[in-house]
Length: 271
Image 1 (spheres, rainbow, N blue to C red):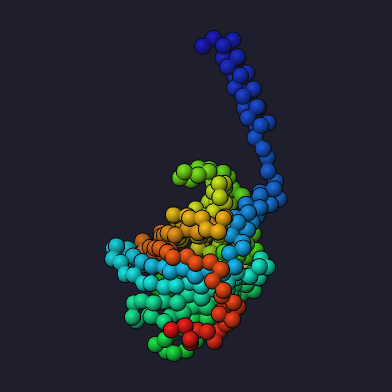
Image 2 (image 1 turned 45 degrees about the vertical axis):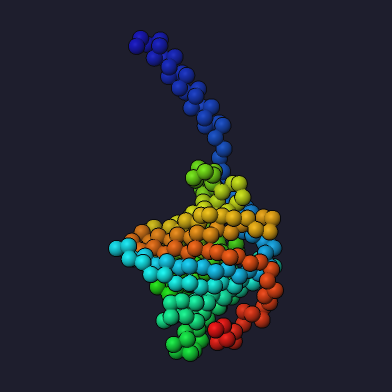
């Protein structure tokens, strides 16, 4: 390559890099935080208006060797219209026999500790879940107690990271940080599709900031003209090799549940 050709090549490369730099948008920290919140809010608010729901689930627990055990349960949810106040939920196990009647009542809060009570039929007593124990496993699964109340929008601060393909969709990748105390996670990274604004995948990082778990959400179906629900949750623990599947079926909405169906006293009457 003679000097003149090399000079022209470098000149063209310089122009190309200049065009790329000029055409690449530069986001400030405030921009990426606002964009992250806006994407999370759009996803969260796409779910508003369902009032209440009842759904059956099959939970499959799988150890590192692949051995499985299963449980069946029902979840009732009461939607609180004010997004600054968390929803209420009641989880009741139907099987196996040794945990039949075990129930978890949750009143999600935003920055204050969630209120959670666990009823153990073998002991015939209601136990309040301490805010310092919410990172513990729920009935031996890879879901923590806080995973059942952590979907409230204002529990987190957000940061948009990038857009990229995720399966058949294009997703916004958003990092979020718990604003509440005693979380078992330092941060989470979510993939939110740009089509119907649903979370497709969620990575959880532990208190040492190491990747702990990944939740995949599949088989979304639309109810009530815009209410989307995933019917398959798969939570994989990268540090233990264990996993838990939740298979949802028979969703019912606007069943007439009221706040009286989510008071502490209901726990001893669910069976």
